[in-house]
Image (cartoon, rainbow, N blue to C red; front, side, top):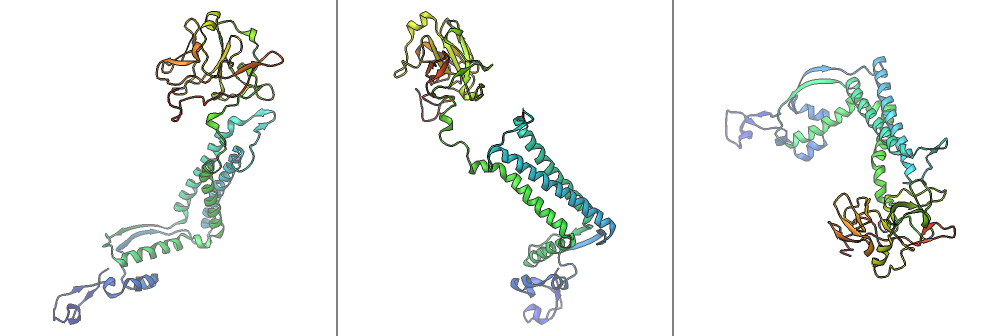
Length: 372
């Protein structure tokens, strides 16, 4: 809004007949404008913000059945969002973030596979309910105006009146008098915020303590089990054969950790004569058996092919080859590090067991390991 002044004072003492344009920014300091309330700002001009209202659909009358029904609907959806967010946090607690790990056993069945889907479902319900609640709130509880607005000139007066308009919009929204809805929105916001931030808790509470990249479940006395859970005796394999084995866990099952998968290879008599164990690993095998990690040291792919005639272990992903008679050192392909070897022995019952964990990290080469 610009006001029109005329007279000598408006032109620095010159008597002019033409109008001189001024405005609130000319008549009042920014500090004075900042202290004015909405009524005082309105008094400075009917079109102080350049808005012309063309049409208004008023909000429901406060206390009317229509207004109460709409408020209940919005409150219900926001409450559902808060409950779903709380359910997400309770389920996520089962990951051990701030509570001990849950045993996801229901009726004797393992429900661990539902952990991630349940997180997705509860988060989806919460976010969907928030969206529906916001749509209903805007459509049913707010007045709808059709208005046009002139482009602002960026004056301080415009900035002050914009702030006043926002405060006036909060009052028109009816939130200050809808205490239950306001409380529900607060609970919903807190729950949704915690739901979104909860997964970041892993950055604060890192369960991978110690040296997780350099250790596996293998340890002294841990049995070597097939994928059906049966242990292995030295007499079970034919010379030149390979068996994939895993570390046993209490209860007779095996640990399904991919990093712990091992190739148990029985060498042929001619390969035993060619065997050249790396320094310090002459006793890592047992008889004509050797055990190497099944994880390729190039990109972490599973090494699953064995040519008994050439004594080469092959990775089908990028064609790396490792010579079993020379400590599984790479002889072809992009891999630059030998497959880690697992030291093995036989227990009192005649089954293969590990004597220790791998002496080095399994999988893709670490930056500080270099070429071994």
